[in-house]
Image (cartoon, rainbow, N blue to C red; front, side, top):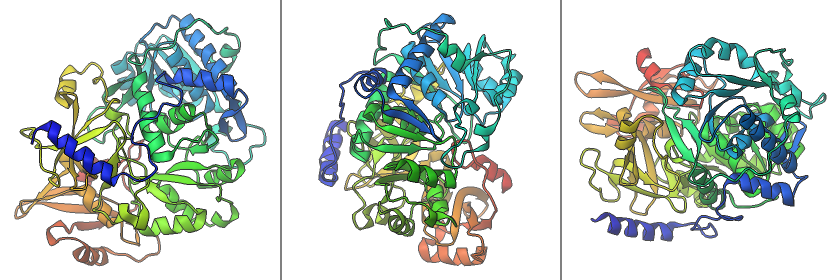
Length: 563
């Protein structure tokens, strides 16, 4: 079939499957303007409204706008020019929001680095992006100093979380907020410097097609690559995903604990609230008691969780001491633990709202490429084939092609998942060959296995290089992990392959059982024989933990070393 006819057929199917009441086009409540202009709008119309609430410390929209103006001026005073990359080495905190919008207003490029990075990892990313200016958490200055000799850094700006920690927080705070501010002589002290800097009111807004961020891939193998994203990418991600998956409600109070250096956390914490003019309750890191305390104290309406986080709350000894009834929209991400009907039932009993999968996405697409909201009637999403990720968000298209020839495959066929979206990366930073391989004729060739069903729904089956051939049959680790996630006594699983002389490959499942469940490998293997085809049944290895990346993915290359 010609691609045009294929896509027209697919759009018709997806229109039929589209949940009622969910917009079918991107929505731009303040027009197609950069998010810096959205921030200016809210600072003018709702100046006193809290933009960020952080353990009792509040930052209003007027303050966020003014302080980010001052940070833009500070960067320009330091000789920063349009397009310069500014490395940001911070945990979640109000200062990160000030710095982020100040970088964008200055016409510079946000280049976030995981605050869990080692000196070697930090040096690699700084050299790769060519940053000459960095903003960092003062407790991370030793890591910066260990890496800086290998980089082009010329300006270092630091800040302390102790400066924004109230004397009497309303709920539990993590240790990193309690660390006393360090005396430093080799960096600019951020907050005093902002107080001494005059904003530049004549700065023009950035163009939508101007580069805004270098978001580094968080893959489990290989060196990270910088994905070039524009102001328009950020805006479209908000306009396509929020109305369809979360709804637009300027009175909403949302909560984010996901790390904002990670693109999913950037969306949830830095972009979505400013797009919608909502209040963000920000946590520096995940903590079940702090989460429940924040929901109760701030009357949080919306949050995104990992399934692991939701499970921890459901099983928490102090769960019933908190009022979580304000929650109305709760999305989740299945990385290690998988969303099951049982988790959904228990979450609904606790909070009164439905837990649903957030989306499929990649750093290359600014993530949030699909949505499952509105597909929960009678657990339709969970009763569908494992690895169901819903429908494309408005304006985004998928197709499935043959990996080798690039030919379109019929609906229902397994092949390479390809995506076309206004928020596609504009290329990998300084990697023209990798860019040309991934971006072809406007489509991102993901390297992932997927299926588009006869009804138009997307299924994500995992990386092609992870696919196993067992007796000539294709076995997808992501599918086995989703099926294992249905076992009531299993906390987590990760599947990799090992070579086998007779069968070609054999799936091996590293699993974590619930404490006290008594589950053993023999029992789980017997369950697998009932739940899946014989050739898919994995060897089972019980473990106490799994090796993880900073963004919550399993390091499967290390699991192969374990084998």
